[in-house]
Image (cartoon, rainbow, N blue to C red; front, side):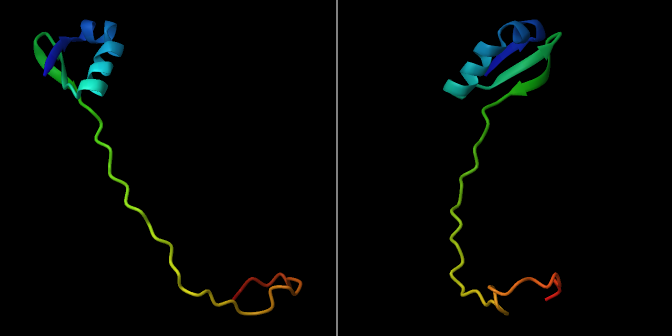
Length: 73
């Protein structure tokens, strides 16, 4: 874990983020020696695949007929 003061964090933010991204480093930002924030790697959630439903679809009425404008089914 790396600790830096606010000024150093502002001036070296890009390089600190690079360390977090590439080396999974945890960085603590301090004010007057007191920790106030932490930069940690973002944990990506695993994606679960969603399988489509294969249930048959029931259609009522004639789909080729002109619409009457009445959408109450």
